[in-house]
Length: 465
Image 1 (tube, rainbow, N blue to C red):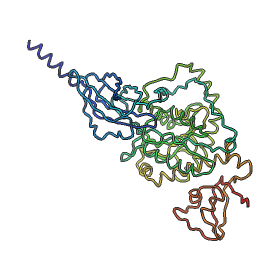
Image 2 (cartoon, one colour):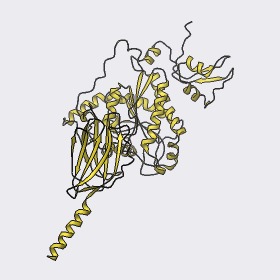
Image 3 (spheres, rainbow, N blue to C red):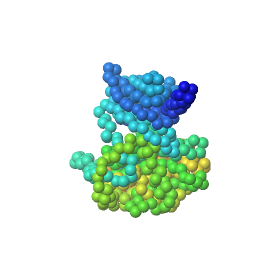
Image 4 (spheres, rainbow, N blue to C red):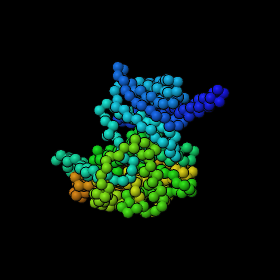
């Protein structure tokens, strides 16, 4: 009897020890979905179902308990109105999420990785946004889906459309990217640079930028290129600030897709790390299909030839521009198998703005001054490339064909009555780019006879009167 009682007690203690605890809850809002992440101390089986009148989601976990603080969850801009929990059957846990509106829910568990432990992820898609629109495959292997076709433009748009740049801030949400000196997070640094870059691009006549990630939320890698394609982008620019195994590594880099392996060991390691981003953020292990991989590779190789050539060209221009304001890791465009660059129809580059694992670079990367300088350098490189090689049908191409775009830097001698704003308008450039070219900082003062540099790619607007 004593032996049986001791065995029963041991079993009870073992069961208590092995129970998984929800130790924290995180909520991330994206434009069309909300992600709820339960951080667990161990694995736990779960079931999910929905209830109506009122709308709510119920998650039952086996052999689990709730130990998270939920008073400060950011629910204001989400479909969630509250979260509550209760024990069931002595050892099981029920979590109820109260909703303000109907959503479509899917859930999946993620194993531990280098940044997180066990997680239970709930993706709540706004009504009318089916889950399969946001699913992506975690493998770097290509799929053999038909090559996407750009939408046909109306005749009224041809010859006058903007050049569209998709600006992608890497990582986001529960995926912080690299974490460097004093806790600097890659996802925060690159989003700030991306927003600055968008503002600079939008200020240039004939250009428009679209942010792939507009806030702090996770987007699967293939979804990022889908967003760029949705906006009919002429260029995809992914911005990062990565880490390396040695804190001494420093310098900015520009990458294009490799058609025959990585060009350096650093490139290979960085690409492998970025490609694991989907495993960190989690996309539920969903594959887009079981197509023949040989056929897929042939299709992609053929379709990527032209876009890869353009990627290397614009990448070289951007790298040269960045090299004027910060040290470079390599003085040529590197190539690696970044999944986010595998768009067959859009020239794509990935910019490593520096190594956040390097204490000196991390201190610069978190400052607004350096972030803005990097954004200006990237914008300048993009601008110079497209002024030289504008896509057909764009306003810039039309101006170049009519001889209204300068092929190189020019000078303007200030005359009486000139102002910086008037000079910028005359050459159809932004006031910011004119100030940057002449290192005027925040000053608007100029003097008669002063010679100003006008950036390459400027447009001389003729007086029609």
